[in-house]
Length: 269
Image (tube, rainbow, N blue to C red):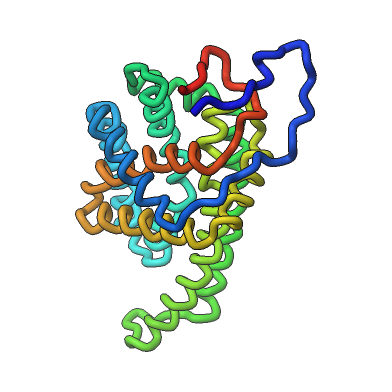
């Protein structure tokens, strides 16, 4: 389906862009369709997707090694939870691979990495936002450790209380991060848009489609859990799958036609 004319088609006209891109109302089972489309992209570009997925797995092993050697349960839990914060940025290459496929091109990992670097300015702004959220979350986690201290050999009830409170605090921050990152980075890859507009657009789309996005969260958490339960090896497959699916979710949810495409980009029919 073709999209309305974009500003780059009329370079002489100044456009008054809205503060956020409009979003569509989704059916509850839409994420299942995104997963199917993501799996199709994974099969169409297996080498590119799995190679980048393998790089992420190696980084995961390195983080786990450092956490175990540090010997602190709090640090280990923080690093695992921190995956929620860096995951959206790590998936940028998968968005570009799906974009190349959708435009009828032959995707390459080099092009995907270049696309990630090309948007480094917006990425840095987004990374700063995530860093602030992560630092606040880390502070909240440390306060949880202060108010609910654990002995060297904690009892089951003591451990359950600590993990329950810590999990509740972490889930609140994770929900916020999900809202601002669900569609913002794919939009940055697709259009010449600033980070604030992309973040507000993503937040609005999630709030408007709560039940749909809840299913999407369940699918993402399940995929990441499978990856971690297989000693991180499964992440080489599940992360590309979620990354590709996220791109299709963005294309179906967000109407970003008011913003110009990046130079050299062309419309998808």
